[in-house]
Image (tube, rainbow, N blue to C red; front, side, top):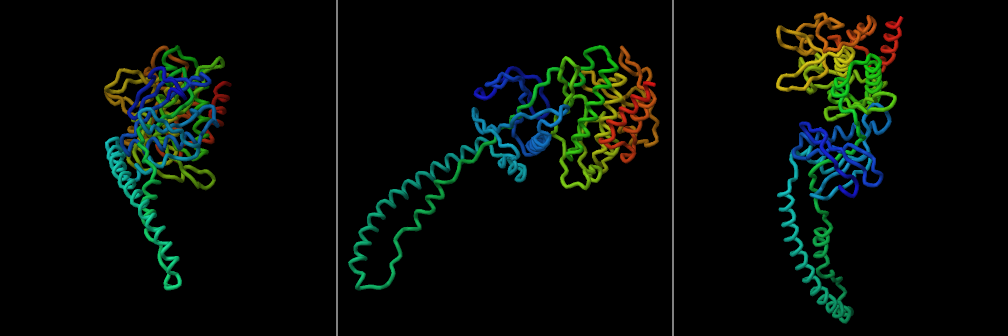
Length: 399
């Protein structure tokens, strides 16, 4: 690793891996390096989904995190760069077989190979002797050629082939971890960035517009994120303002061959995502489409524009997110709409915003938020219309 990158410090830790701040050894460029341990097939499947999605987005959109390179760790100090466009076959095999080659299994192979090599050496010595005998036999055959016309099969020729196959077998790779090298975002995630400073209406609107652009780009490529939330949006601080980056594609799904790029025709069934941003159809265990991403965006937009926060049970960190109050409990919007599809959401949310309070969104923006948070997925605007809808709403509200 030291020859390619230097690890400075840990900057994040999640359920599946650890993220470090680091630098490229040659250029000194600061990067984020994510280590994903290949401990079980279920985790590996998520890693491959993330890798495939990030390779598809490449560096083509300013609001989607850029992947610089990917490395496969095959030993304690051994890293193998992965070629662009190809998935590591040992990891694909682990997912398909449902088992991972562990270090002790690798040691067993080493012992087996050592035994095999000893056998090969013995066979080789035996072949050396038989080759000498064979040469003498050929001379005798030549002298007796006039006496016999029956073809003689060369002796011991077949013995060499098994030994050659044994010697040519490559040593199996031990996949210990995947390392994803990505662009570094110095502003932290969207929660940290927005809640660490006073509200700024223009900055909030810029964040909303950038997220619209990012999700439209992903959906155009056939990528459904399935876990959009402020934790999975990173921020780069620039002199011209924040640049947000959609990240963490471990739960994403790619759809190929869709007619006219219509992602709403592709249905998913796995219940995944984060409670406070999950669409009602996902809460209910129904099949769902990319429109679930639009609902998640709606929750984020509402929270960003009104600075609505909550503290999830079992945590102490304040997070951006809209919700419904049920007694003294906070209920996720998706869950509330699943229980009552006719529930009327109150936008703007009065008396429930974290001080200091930004100005509430205007009527046109409130209408757009209600459309994005519709209980019926088909009533939500598709991603490729969101940017135009936001611009139109802002223009109307500014009059």
